[in-house]
Length: 284
Image (cartoon, rainbow, N blue to C red):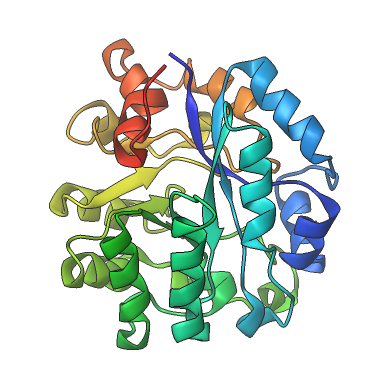
């Protein structure tokens, strides 16, 4: 079965500049890498040659950062060019209110995108803020999942003041847990192991049927033991493979996954089956 990487950023110059500029540079340094800029064609070929499907994530943090969004039409165009390899999630800025709701609806109904991506730390918002409830209710009504960054972020990592970013926005409990309870029809994907609040995300996924965990952004060799334990047992149907490309490549993640203590009988679930079910895809 082809693995499904649920956390892919397009490493094009336009995307990297619009999604953070100096903050992106700090993120690559945080991962111990040089800034990696690639063409869309190179990214598509990399995923095709590896036999991996990917979820390409949009970006809109304009209100908080002042930088223009990456157009969701760009994400949709990549998906159209490589529909055998990628599906797309819209980038939506919650602070844009009714415009955000309309953009989400356009992205799903007209552009054919299959979900929405949010980064509370970079977008400077709390998911449980009632002002943003209509946007998440729209996600639920459209039947598309919402993926949220959780925990520490490499953006602004090791910069003075962390580049002005506040990590508290990415704490799972109470902010994301409140939203999961308030909008039970919303499928929530909590991205990354949520460190230093990993156990909060584990508890949230155990308690809420509509919450899943995306394991991106960390090599599996560094996962906290409690995360591996729960992924092998009680959360074996709730954990999803994600890389955080281009910061961490899917081939590196998959290589480290093989020796990270995951049981053979749950590997296909984590790599393919759980994501296929959440995204409504056929597991090839």
